[in-house]
Image (cartoon, rainbow, N blue to C red; front, side, top):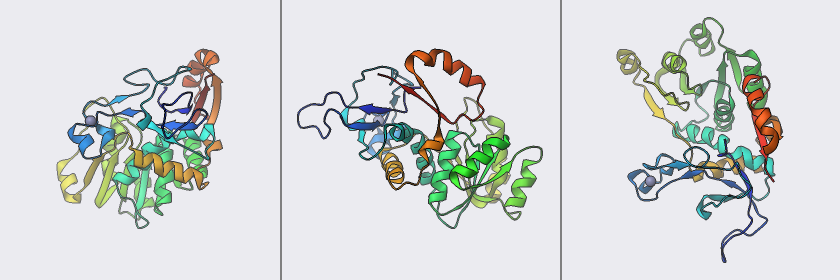
Length: 280
Ligand SMILES: [Zn+2]
């Protein structure tokens, strides 16, 4: 929490590109600017990356000092929309990693917020997109929000994926579960010559069959965080009216009430996509 931020500028130094009162979104990935990744523009995987709200205190406060390079002007966006930019940028980044285009058949495994973001941007690339989830309600919600087709993974998911792809598998598969078993299983869903993108992360080892990996000549990607380019893609997409923000924000609370609301929402997840905490 505290890394998906909409902020109002309270004070800015003389000559800054922002002025008090401006509404911004925040790139919470504080990168060093000097390491090998930063030198290549891959600030999302900086060697000494520090993420606001993860590695250091983030936005669960009334006042926050942020390096001006990490503030992204979001003129024309509502405060609510600003707060969705970061999680959507994760999806936009993953889709950019895989260079998805209109010829691709894409499978997104996991219909949580990250999977939803991936599905939305894969659809915007013109690809055919199928979302797979164990929960029928979540899968249906993903369909109505992103326009993707869906598969409910109850029982024989491998067979359902096969049928959905004419027995060939999908050219691009995204894992958005962060579940070791699902991440390993999804290797089977990728077509020969295809790409597999791990967006979800698990604190464990994952393994796969090397003969299968080689036979298919798979390309395997990790996708971590997002860069300024991805934030810009998301903001442009919201400005163009392509993201149904009001469908993504399902819950709302204040900092005071968050203490009692959050434990409740953590166990009663039905209908929950994103919750906003308003801080005065
Ligand atoms: Zn760096």
